[in-house]
Length: 243
Ligand SMILES: NC(=O)c1ccc[n+]([C@@H]2O[C@H](COP(=O)([O-])OP(=O)(O)OC[C@H]3O[C@@H](n4cnc5c(N)ncnc54)[C@H](OP(=O)(O)O)[C@@H]3O)[C@@H](O)[C@H]2O)c1
Image (cartoon, rainbow, N blue to C red; front, side, top):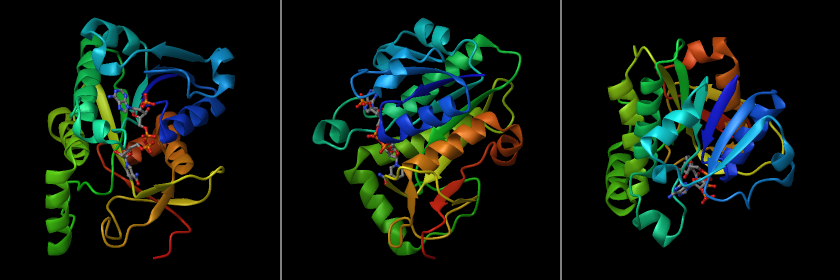
């Protein structure tokens, strides 16, 4: 099986790629620079490194890179500096999702391709009645105005939910929603819920990036797990997060 990963140079993207390589998957990554990547990756025969900024690629190039892939995963996120938050591309995650999905549709593969999007618990799954308090609604409204990357994350998941939908011939998707991200070296126990069990704003839990990578890799490799979560927006917490 081959997976294309975008955002592979990021803190979570690196963990996802490592988890896929542990599972002996073939992986293609598109990164702006190979400098941040682990040295061992450069001689790994299972890994193809494409050095490019994803949105600078032509439609034909994106179609070529997605061709033959069983899964595509995005760990993209805006860099947390002024340029990353307020500069272009404002719709990095949404436009990348849209263009990768268009390419997947163009490729007309025999079996549906799995699309795994790294999203956030700050976003609601509007297919479900996910209750949030009035105070949280107000804060999220403010975040939408002040932090464009949040809107981008919401739109990317909305695109999968409403435009790809539940019954697409060429694409199946899961939008994984981590709570507060932390760094840990080892995979630990974690829980997966269909919806948040705590407030993402006033009572955020924790999840390690390696656990997010582990779950995303399992979704890609394990069809039973995939069938359980496809078309949904599972929320992931470290087991050790106190309730
Ligand atoms: N922080 C949290 O607690 C939290 C919780 C839930 C969800 N999230 C979401 O998860 C995302 C990923 O988290 P992370 O910590 O793994 O992020 P990260 O380390 O900042 O990684 C972001 C990735 O996106 C790439 N990228 C950024 N701007 C780009 C551009 N203009 N063109 C192409 N690639 C670009 C980066 O590439 P370069 O290496 O080239 O910069 C990097 O590979 C966050 O951004 C957020 O949306 C965060």
